[in-house]
Image (cartoon, rainbow, N blue to C red; front, top):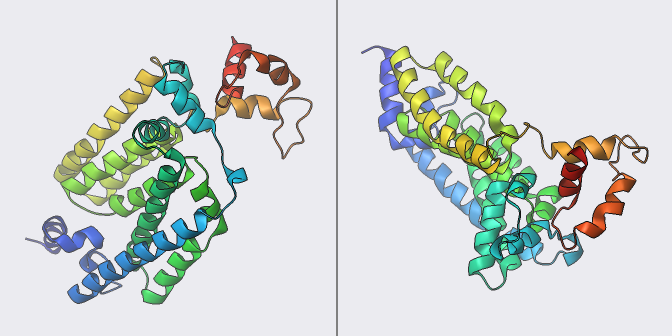
Length: 300
């Protein structure tokens, strides 16, 4: 067995491969006890981040709150949400909000708690990800910069999918570097969930097989690429079903971007709704993010 085969075997069979096997990073040695310490530090960072965020997010004013997802969820629960509206929003985040609104008496507080947990998990994963390539001090500095970001704190208060996106993206980067069949499958699951959050993640699906092809031998590549593709195809098919046979453009809110920026009231750097949207607003009372429905009507 050559050296590369030994490394591959060790990466597949050893639990330490999940947090970054030092054998795969020869320029940065970490002892087994150091790996245990990394996991312990990551757990401490995650718990501390959760406590900090949940305490501070709750103190932010309600004026920061967007209601389009809770409004859409209420319409979904009472059966009045049009099927085509699902892809106007983030499908996965909408389904999460629908579930929370159905089973929790205070859905806004439950969603803020959920997003605080996601931020905590991101902080722990980010530390482990940085420790694969950097010493302790830069790794802690990177986590601190993330935790202290005011943007992250504010978005944790918003009922928008950005925190979920950050979590899935960090988890994807964390998993894609790891070898082994299980990690390839989990990478596919993560990217599939990312597609259901924002279809623009489809571009990553084109890069991962190429990365596997350059990294693996041919036999291993066939296995990892297949296991990666299975959950990804299921996610793609789900989006096509939600889109009634069509995959949406790989952009965020393509309709609103088109119309907000291309009307006489736009300023170039600030999108402004065209006057026609205000005239049609009366047809969409209590509609969540009504501009999508109006622009769809205009395009037809």
